Image (cartoon, rainbow, N blue to C red; front, top):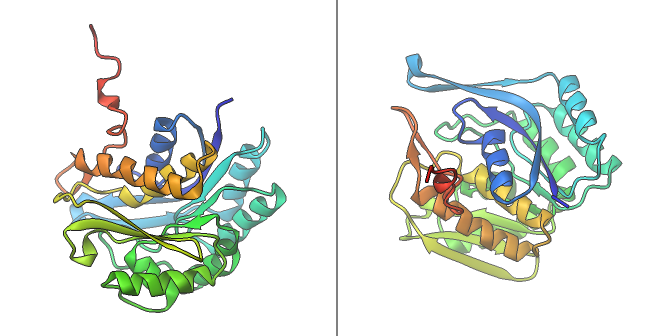
Length: 274
């Protein structure tokens, strides 16, 4: 039986992040993906690639979820950009109503390349309503600094302190994505299960073609959980999956490049005429 996986997130019109990244990743993992779109993100090439986030009306989000949950039980789900407090509340309602397990909360607070955070009330609602439901939450350094209240994180020691504070908010596990912001020559992520820290090291690729990396990591973790992987295995496999995606990133337009979601499975070699 093919595992069924849900993403509740924003749509990235450029095709690299959001539900586009999630569904591509779910497919690469051999799972069947469902999506409830919460907002639409567009970028204007006439205004320096400025980002515009347009939330969808929460009632429409609920109609999507009602459609999705009308079928067989789902094996895992993730959340990304949620847009409004009402959408956060609706998402929690469906988690509770269907007793969802294997929940990945990716606390998206801004679009890559921008510093504009979501409304503080939205962040508060996410912390109060969704983090306690999470099997794991997957913040980057900026998001972890906000969730923990510690501000800018610049070292592994600070990441550990942030992880402790985030666990106190209710998730069973947390992985903080270090990325290039640490200024270390390796790609370091920190996993914490409330008892033990695990430092995940990998090659740091010198590339700007990494749009969608965070969404892809969370989606890969979600699909791994759906397929029965222990949390630590799902996270480690997701890191390998994203590393391949970043290493093989593609220039999409004059403004940015995307990770290649098919890299781990060499999807570019499929359906080649022989």
